[in-house]
Image 1 (cartoon, rainbow, N blue to C red):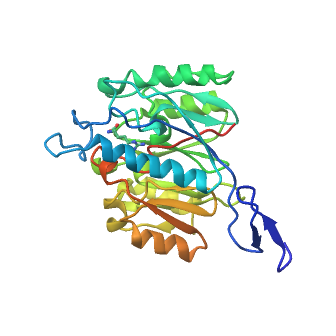
Image 2 (cartoon, protein in one colour):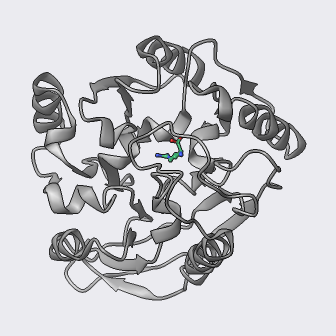
Length: 291
Ligand code: ARG
């Protein structure tokens, strides 16, 4: 675009100068943490001995939802279910690209029933192509869409065979990445996509969460990525949600926020301290509906 050209922001109607980051309007699916607790242990963040306030979790979740709405996005919700304390982590229950849905199949028995509630939601909301996976598949927990490639994590949750299954069902090229640190048990706590609208997607990631070979793959694919450090990763800072301009991050991720700001993004910090007790952050609570 010529210098000084301005692009309208579909969300707010604001205009942006040439070279500025431009947001695109998103549709998200979220689930209120009405029955949130930490009563079983399926990742190193979960400690049933530490007190958890369901009320605070609901407040933080409401803030996150209001943040998306203020940024111009649409938030759909699914009814939470008693006995499914992790259902708030909606990102784990479906991967939606081009209106096609690949459902999920959880590794832990405690979360297994969530998948069916989401499958039903998709069918009731007009999705025609809803495929449930054969292999263990924790959806956007381990799948990140860059706009052209589906980055797929494995090592702790999603079965590597689910990567090939996703490629067939969604018809999108999949790149497998090996996770090696149990604290970063899902891809979405080790990497997130900052820009999925340009020809050269931009991601942020924490290299040490990946095997040496996968680190090499990430360097080749994303030579200009934002590289996070241990401090960024330890507050689950990589569990971010970007609309191409605004980047929602846990409020402790101040160092990562500075780094994304240097690249022209607008960090938006939110308090997710209660949800982190289960090993989750903003992205885990947010499934993107790419219709
Ligand atoms: N307690 C949940 C689990 O371990 C947290 C899931 C967080 N979600 C995510 N997308 N990383 O399954």
